[in-house]
Amino acid sequence: MSGTAGQKWLWMLLRPVFRLSPTPTQGIRRRILNLCGARLAPATKIWPTVRIDKPWNLSAGRLTIFGQGADLRLDERLDIGERCVISQYTIVATSCIEPDQGPGVPDPARVRRGPIVIEDDCWIATDAFVMPGSVVHAGTVVGARALVDGEVTGWSVAVGEPARAIKPRTFANAAE
Image 1 (tube, helix red, strand yellow):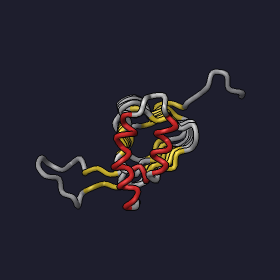
Image 2 (image 1 turned 180 degrees about the horizontal axis):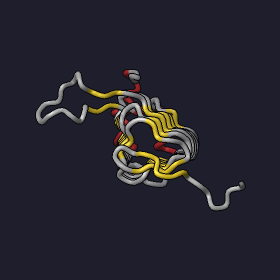
Image 3 (image 1 turned 60 degrees about the vertical axis):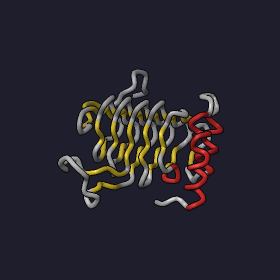
Image 4 (image 1 turned 180 degrees about the vertical axis):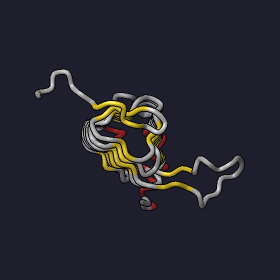
């Protein structure tokens, strides 16, 4: 999805304000991103060190948190549900070059693109990488430094490269 010329210019002008805003001013950053075409629900928290190249492709539900240094590379849509955490230094990329290309200038015809969906109640842990076209189903915890490529089963703990569910996510005091 492409932002309007106005959204692009506005983001170019407001990005320094976003980056230099004091940490407690979540509301100001949310308003800036919404002005630039993002769809962020109230109570979404986003650190000033989060890198977003195209906010008009971002949608996040209420109580979602973006950690320090998270990197959102959004050539396509990124839809995040409610009560999610995108931890520090996580990269979410809706486009990237195919990894099997050799050294040198990458072939632009071999770019993987696709929207990403992260459903409600998910936690993408520190330094994880979410590839284009991935779907993280509701309730999933993606372990630190994992590589999400494709779908990850709901209500599970997923780790590795590529991330695979290793066990179901359970709660100690859950009603049976």
